[in-house]
Length: 117
Image 1 (cartoon, one colour):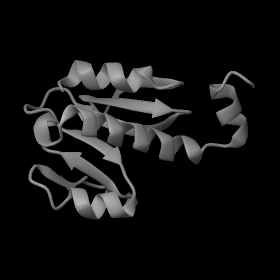
Image 2 (cartoon, rainbow, N blue to C red; image 1 turned 180 degrees about the horizontal axis):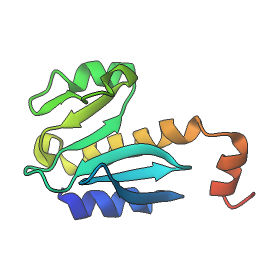
Image 3 (cartoon, rainbow, N blue to C red; image 1 turned 90 degrees about the vertical axis):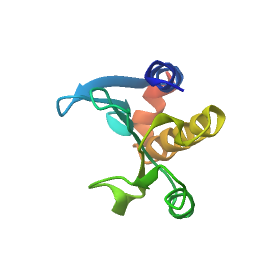
């Protein structure tokens, strides 16, 4: 996957938004909370996302995947390049990150995202 593929997938998730912050990081949010971020200016592009403690332990053992700076304590990983995971696995992890972040939103915000608020 490239940056545009990541962007298209993240924005296909219900209620997902994007914005550039911290100079060159494209961040994807749901309900105002970040679920993934990709560096735009650095090559190769780096991608970070939230995962479960079990996934975190497994992923950081793989080549090209490290604990995300400043966010590892919250079980975020960073892909040192977008090819560190194949496209299907990357989409699965991005969706799981989205789901975990969305699940922590208030019921009111979740209802608004579902179009019921």
